[in-house]
Image (cartoon, rainbow, N blue to C red; front, side, top):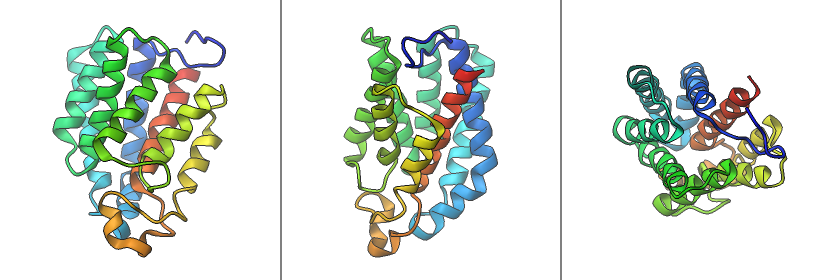
Length: 202
């Protein structure tokens, strides 16, 4: 992986490895994601993400994408059609936003992730502090801007969702009872970014 400063440069090999590692993490943490989703959601986040990522890696295997654009298209299509629940459209939107930013000629990976973040916000209408996946995506993009993305930054962003009261999504229905729980979408997003750092380091 070639780095400009310390901004990640995503190429096709790294991208495929990223998705494989994300899938491994999702499968390992599937039950924990379900546990997180039980008090404040529909208890389906683990199963939904597990199913979606299984399809993603199978599609990558069968279609052998040869460009980052082709890879992002495969990921987007499978997350949108296979994940279900609230997370499918949100993760699908994230990768669709990344794909669109990339197709517009943007090569900075931070800006491509920023495109993903903006796309999630458009779809889910959530802001930082609403106890959603945005609470991990926004600090990650910010940390990349300052060349400071580490596993610790990602974990801190997840922990920071615990004291928040959910204002969006299914968790907002339980109001005060959402306080004290980690947001499942924030946790699965953390797995995505841990996998990204790991793929890059290989």
